[in-house]
Amino acid sequence: MSRENERERWGPFPLIVAGAVAAVLVILLVDPRWGGFALGGVLMVAAALRFAGFDGQLAVRDKKTDVVTLIAFGFLMALTSLALYNNEFKAWLLSLLAG
Image (cartoon, rainbow, N blue to C red; front, side):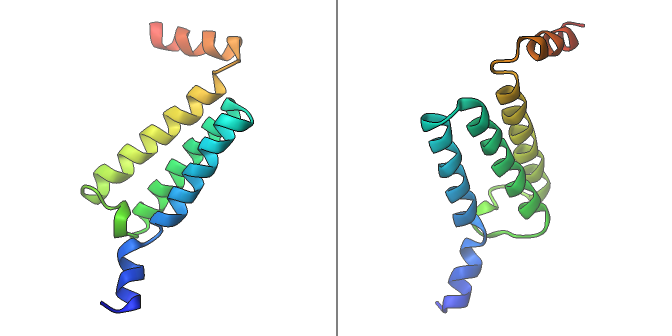
């Protein structure tokens, strides 16, 4: 297998993994809010790359399912990290979900 095909097969996956590892380290060592927000951002970057047509190891299912799943998880991760220590935001979010 040529070097170009091997690079194409992996695609941007190592970049996404490095970003996720960095975000988890921020969660563990610095601040869970910022690390969770960064992890949500990494997932949304992965969704954007998958939408742009990068396959490689990011392609798990069909393109539409991958993009929707990554955006949903990234958005929920960022939203949860914002609500972690913010009681007003948490109350507003719960009022939206209640009715």
